[in-house]
Amino acid sequence: MNEQRRGLCAALAATAARAAWGGPALAADWPGQKPISYVVPFTVGGSTDVVGRLLAQKLGERLHQNVIVENKPGAAGGIGAAYVAKAPADGYTLFGGTISTHAINASLYKNLKYDPVKDFEPVSLIAYLPNVLLVDPNLGVNSVADLIALLKRDPSKRTFASSGAGTSTHLAGELFSSMIGVPLTHVPYKGTPPAMVDVSSGAVTFMFDQMTAALPLLQNGKLKLLAVTTRNRIALAPDVPTMAEAGVPGFQMASWQAVYAPRGTPKPILDRLAREIAAIVKEPEVQEKLGKTMGMELVGSTPEELRDLMATEIPRWAEVVRKSGASVD
Image (cartoon, rainbow, N blue to C red; front, top):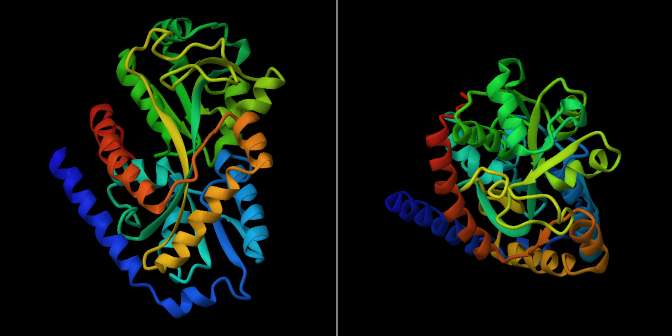
């Protein structure tokens, strides 16, 4: 693991060096008169889309330039990521990256169409998102212990949904399966909304997903919240136990949202974007919508801090993939 971490750090440092030599003339003219594309690699309505649209609006206001959101879902964000990896490194294409696209996919996919380290420049970590365990209120379970008992008792119920193969929601289900010792069938969807609809109807037994995406269905009683996957309880659901408190000690994970640019994007552009994002996450409207209302822990990091996070997260999730036996291709 240490050798893997050292190699990863070296690759990240090399990527940073390339960005530092980006064209100064290009950076001086940016953003000019050309609209900026912000690629969201998941469907409309999911947490990555919600974050991307608000961020695009705010960046547009601060840069005095249109920032247009493009949804390119599929392959746990891999389709959108591969598209951005080939885009010109001129500051006019940004990417809404996640724990899936820039940590988990590196080990889960054997034939990944992009390299999360070598093909991208980190810009800023936007936020951490609490994950939750969700079931249909009519399933007849009121706790994680009840759910585990049902899964052990009834093989027909051994299914879990996710927003796509290779996403953090997929890996959470695989980790849960390995920790409780019950084989489960993964049912991947093209995004969070259709997955939640099928869980709420009882078509699939349960799923893990971000609290942000689950809130509407929780509020109208279409889903039931059994536990949170963070180390501590969260402010949006203070009475809901953590997975550890609910009887699965050691189960802990939090998703994250970040911004990236294609490899070679000039460092002055990356730094300008990071400064703007750091200011945006402090705005009262953003704090209200993403922080208080959706439960996100807002960050607004530097490119270097996001690079350090990747150096930790990529090997961490490689170990989860190895232990769980999860595979996509």
